[in-house]
Length: 370
Image (tube, rainbow, N blue to C red):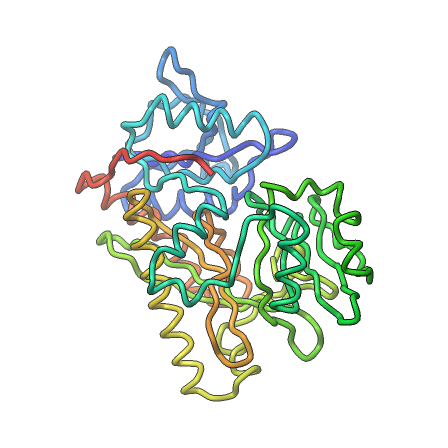
């Protein structure tokens, strides 16, 4: 039986996140004839080429530690973190480049924006974005767009994102979340005070300035859409599903971990536009954009297995690509009650792993880790 090693990180206190997903993936793999275990770079013994893996025992209903050989396929679920553990991931992928990986490391958000901007078919869907160099860049964006977002180039989960709105008469409104994801109370200041107000944030070379898209619903809460595209058991890209996300009150982001609410794609779009033909048009645009994005990214970095797109739709129905996520969660589909979509989202990595194993189509294309 071929083996799939799911590589992840320990968090604080040596906790492994996504264990519920990994348990379901293990069950799906078993039904397909694929043995699944979980490990971190810290669990690897380089001298013996053995792994102290986590294996889910269905009979006992718990995770057990067992010795395992290197897996036939590696499913990298390691999300960026500013710790020594990310350096261990770098070392693992450098030391074992010939393992059959299901995905490749990508660049940070600024590098990804630059890459996507080169594609003339994708470019119309990208908000104007620049790397933060000085407060003059920010004030120029405020003057041009009225609303801007400041985003860390390597942030996740809505951490450290600020929204700044030009109120006129030299005033602006700042709100957002700090690096611990806590909501920052809205604060009205003069535009010429922005630089002093944000001096402790170390924005230069670490942040992006992005054109703000008007995402507020009538109740003032922001919203966007999460589209998941994955490779299936035939190795072909297929859109698995799309769901709407509504942010918590006073939040500038829609992230579910930040208190956001998940709703069906159709319900949210119908609430905004009411036209079935408009909804179908927007959905088709999103699906086509997703395929264009994954093909373009693969040409640069090599074979991938799945990707999530965070998408905004403005009041005119124009689709905007806010960012992409190569290590996406899939719980949003469970939350909105789309159980068949959720099942596909869980099973497809196992199906694609078997496709790779049988066809030997993995490559060793390397690039900078995000």
